[in-house]
Length: 278
Image 1 (cartoon, rainbow, N blue to C red):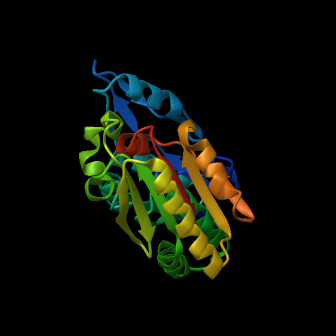
Image 2 (cartoon, rainbow, N blue to C red):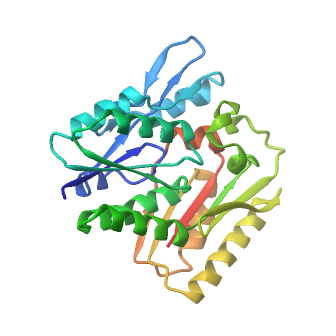
């Protein structure tokens, strides 16, 4: 088996792993208020994500659009020249249109084995999921092994997302045009917790420092009960001190900063903190 992994760019894995694990991302695009289309993906491994986030933050009427069925078919067909198996990882929960487009594209490409893996992870937790799954894929002999391990990973990854968007979990990308970046500074902060494969609202408070204490306490309880081997995190500059305070409390062999993504900007805006661990 000679596998490659396809992800959409909401899966926030550091880009240095693309070549290491044969990971091929497929990008989103935005249409600004003048109707001009801006592509996130320029080439196979070349993106202008930060530039598009900047455009979206300045143009509140800019809307995000998912990679199309045609985009998936072209990438799957291109990869079929060098690989015999594709593991395409997306989220029917957060990015349902992307997931459905991948499923349709799979039926249209017959010269390579394609397996669509579903995960409810988001942001940093999705980056952690991809890295751990990529390690399994690189050594797996059968598709069934990969499927079983993906289910296990979804259960064992834990994550906290702090934002002002109460509807992050319930709405997802189905209402992505609402733009979390437009949320009022008067809105309270919300902790969304990912635990055992499910997302839920953990706590709501106007004081983010109190919520960071809750996050730190929650991680400490898990850290005392079991070994934490990997952490992914992402934050805006406002919360740099808080993340440093959390990370210095633990001895973790693998700590990575997740990349930015367009879906995350549209779902939770720039005023956020997220951390995932396994």
